[in-house]
Image (cartoon, rainbow, N blue to C red; front, side, top):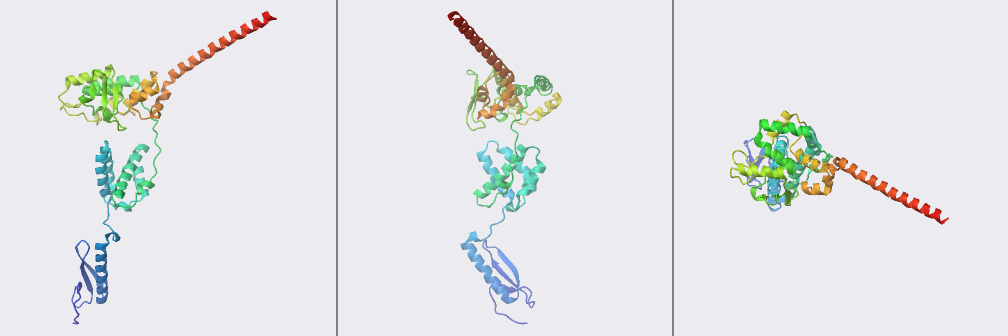
Length: 364
């Protein structure tokens, strides 16, 4: 058997096979073994690998970073969401639905067409599709900020056109049936229902009201942090005041106005509401539509849009303008006033004309 001079890191795994291997420690200190073939090839490969290891320690940016999965990005995005968004639970819910499909995948290998296909198959409205696109894009943006990836495929996914003009409000007969169903199935929830109808508060605002936010003397409450990030004052009518007083009488000591039978903050989950909607045969209606009902009824009662904007807490008048078409009766009354005014002006003009004619006749 031929003998060879020993070379560091080069060895014949099976003596006499003439198949040589190399052994070295990588940049992380882990032992690596590679099959090289002939002895000289093994020596050359060993030198190459040692050079790469040396460069890797001095210039680590020249070497490929460990693969980052979508699950890694999603975890970072959720951490950011919890720290910066009041509604972070929505992001958590959407991410949980995305992980079975994309979680194990390398983030940079996911193509825009795959994101589009998943969204199309798992969402039913443009608004929902856009929310999923947004949370995916958030995950990639955080990855780029953290220098974990270089690309954001979600940017190439087109936003869907949303119909923000949807207005579904409660008709009088629907309200009658709905109240009856609530009284029959879950009367303890009627105060929350009445309060929503008479204040137009968003669910997140209503169910986070604390007793320290309520001023019964001024018939007012404060929403410390509204959807737009600022506090706003909400006036209370006699119906909403009655709900507050009833809640005070029945309070079990919770700091929150709306509490459950355990004395804990009432959940925003409206499973009970969906059940009474079915019982009352009220279709295509959501809890948020109670807010639409509040704004719609104000407009139909002749309240000006600027006042409706203030009462609803809309940031812009454009949001309130969605209800403008409901003020048709008020608009018709205004047009009638215009007709009466024009008729009055014509009458005055005719009178002046007749007087002028008579004056000219007398002068002649």
